Each structure stands twice: as structure tokens, then as C-alpha cells.
Length: 174
Image (tube, rainbow, N blue to C red; front, side, top):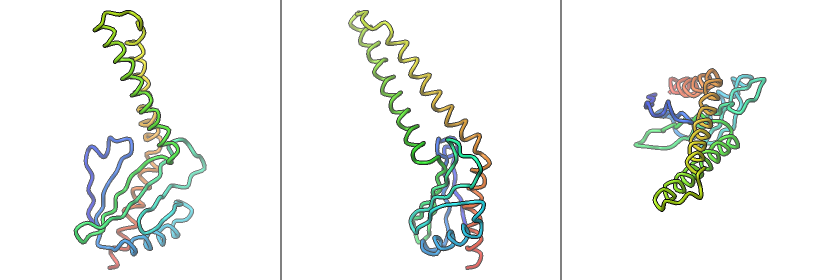
């Protein structure tokens, strides 16, 4: 098994990695199911031959409870397993909505400020302050995501270990 990861993958909101194996998609899915059933108290998830979603069983459930999404593809006669860490889809959608909203508002306020300066109008004196407020909101949203990743680091390590062990354990048998 070969693993590929870049520096950019580590600083993203949703860190990712890529593993290469000689197992077929179907065999890999069956092996994942078997590994998941062997570690039932520690992990839970949903697995099919194209996609798997795994999460760590814990007594608490915070906004960044990480999930590992594993997608299997065939590239150059090898099975490629792409892993993406992230929160639940509802939390991820909410964060993306906030990024979109604050970005659009920042562009709107900054455009209002710039146009007002160009035409020498003073109808929107708050536009520059509004654009700085939106930049602050964007930074706060990013900081909240990074804080959640920091809090869930141990769970993300367990999920990464799950991905590697579930592949290595069965690849050695072939």
C-alpha cells in the first residue's frame, strides 16, 4: 500500500489523503465491512463498494465530530482510496453557507465603498466598516472550523488508523 498526502491537504478545512492498493473495489468494501464488524464498539459507519463513511463512537457529539469518507476508484489498474475527513454533512453545509454569505457581503460592502469613493458620494459611510466586519466574520468562521479540528484530532487519528489498518490487514493476506 502506498499513501499520498501534500502539505495543502493538511491545512484544508477538510483534510484529505490518498492510498493505493491492489485490492478490487468489491474486495476492499467487503474487507472494510469485516474490519468494521471486528471493531464495532469503537467505530460505526455505512459501507458500499463505491463509498464508505466511518465515524468514531464517543459518548459526546460536538459540532466537529469527524467522519471519514472513503471513496474507491480505479486508476491505472490500481484501486485508489481517497479519504476525506470532515464533520457531518449538515455541519459542513452550514459552514459553507457562512463562508458564502460573508464573502458575498464583503464583496458587496467593499464594492459600495469603492464606488462611493469613485463618484465622491457619501451615502454609505458604513460600507468600509461593514466590509471589515465581514472579513472578521470570515476569520471567525475559519477559526471555529480549525478549533473543531483541534478538538477532534484524536478521533481523526483513530479514523486515519482505521483507514490504514483496514487496508493493510487484508492486503497482506493476498
